Image 1 (cartoon, helix red, strand yellow):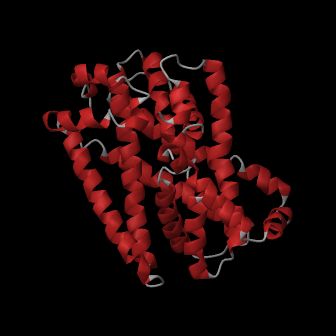
Image 2 (image 1 turned 90 degrees about the vertical axis):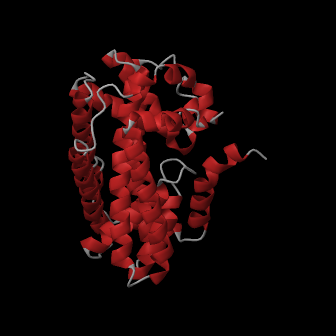
Length: 326
């Protein structure tokens, strides 16, 4: 049995298990009682989050002298959504590096370092929110202590790796191994990057500069959680905002495990477990989670698919390998 092909569908198996064991009629009922106008307006609620992400990215692009317009970087984000959606574990989102390279006429290595830094900053900020979230919930669920210790260790390791990454000489050996990692390997010619490692560090910002993107990342997560908090009201999910942020932070970390498409399945099981502390029934949680998945990932991915068709599939991206993770 090929584990590479099994792992990406684990999330779907979890989701099917959840759906089989809950009352689907209650989910349909939850949607039926919501004003259609509110549902329609909610579709556009992710827009401020994406615009803020693009603003954050533009700051980093300009720092590294990668010249693309605000509109193009916005389109590039949607292209990343599309490739991430059709690839196991979402690794295909890195395909947008090739589009960035072609548009900016900048080296692939430089674009690669830019996107890696952007994603790392966002993940560090999410981990920090998740750690504080667990601390907030510990009095209700002491069993979260093990997860807290795990996340602290992961955060420390990522920060150490980030610091090493910013040190050119120290990171050369590590970087060479990273670009040979199979999910990224199909997108990037590892030999070419290894032979031109200097380009990776060209105009790379220092740690001091990363404070600005980091703060924007935190604002972006808070904005996203606040929007979901408002949408949750439509499904009669009412808990304090501080607990809501704590739960969503933890659930998003669980959803980042690359065993499904954008956390589908893993996010639901995490949310059901955490919201149960507040006596919220699973049907309402699944309704909210699937609706948010549609807004935050499915619709942007479809939109990104149309943009990709218009821009054209990049000839450097091996679509077959992207789909099969070979």
